[in-house]
Image 1 (tube, rainbow, N blue to C red):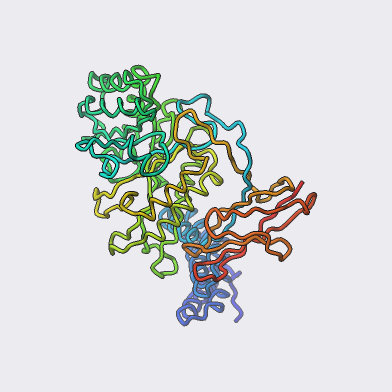
Image 2 (cartoon, one colour):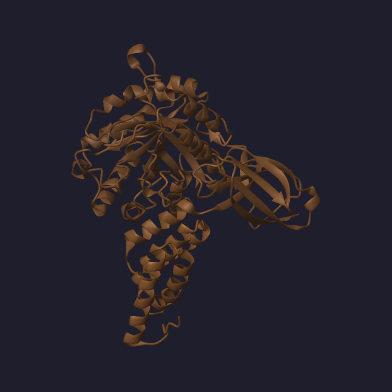
Length: 515
């Protein structure tokens, strides 16, 4: 068919839409290759005319056709174009949805080699920051297995017993306006046990109740006089519509700055100010940032609950990465502020169906804790939300003591030397990126953050010149490989990933130079 798409005016418009309708018919009949060819003829016309909304629609169709052919890499590439052009058309939500869809099927492999930790960074001596490694913490107040004051059980003592490792800090919630005396025992125990507290101060009656008055100064003095290390997290998750302090960024910034000023005057020696949005929605986060002068640490709430509703393949799977949800905060703030996961977890139940998803949750937990030190080396803390709560319509299932397999995975994960049990410690290990880099030609521990459209993987193998040189069966896919024979050479490492049925789902190529 000869299509005069390069003609101008009405003839071109009629021609373009004729081709579009024909492509739709082909797509509906499952003739995806023919449909793709038609869509590809007209997509550039819309781009040239700066009709970005229709250009985005064409690339969405092309991506959907590739999905029908199970050519997922090509689908991802075209959904990326959909995201780009819908963004140019000011269709923000369409762009976000397209990028999310693409990311859920995107295949990639980032490789790293273990090395001794370097000097690291404490961000100019910001309070409590480890030069290398991440402080581990938890919210455990509602877990009866570790906290039951009537029976003399306190989480500062019992959570380390449960998890096999001392934790550096614990999260508490505190409603603004409540009696500061409610914190006294917690502060006392924290100091006695050598742990810090992250105090989540929540203005549940709204931001107008926050003033520079006797109450706020009394709260700051009480915390300051305790001498316990405190992360003061004021009004978190402000970027989401589920909290009363959402909706007025200007007022939020004003109140955060006020609280920071008072605490620096009354509790300057033992309090670090924490600003902590939710991981989503990302597009509202920056408008609430109070400014570098008022924020010591940047935190984020990071949760993953099984949700198949967004599965691009419509197969009832959750293909999301818990780790990737940290990317926006890290990329935006880690260069200038210590960043951490101020609360978070992976739920072991699909709440709407009450279906057990322990195996999936264990995989996601292990992948997260094992990959975090490699992918986001400047992360300075991780708090697990150890609770099964019912604060919203979706019941949450994160409690470690309630799930033996999840607890086992957590214990083994935080045993990694990158995770620190006390303020003042420093991790002895770090990781060097391998992709397009130069590494020493020795016996090395090679690890990887490997993603693909399969929600979980069972095996990753490494090949050089068609020969398998290493295999691993769990994240972070660590294999000891002898690179000495390749000194002075440039290599292409083939990273092969297999799904739970043992089927090869992707091969990614990584270039590296040996010296």
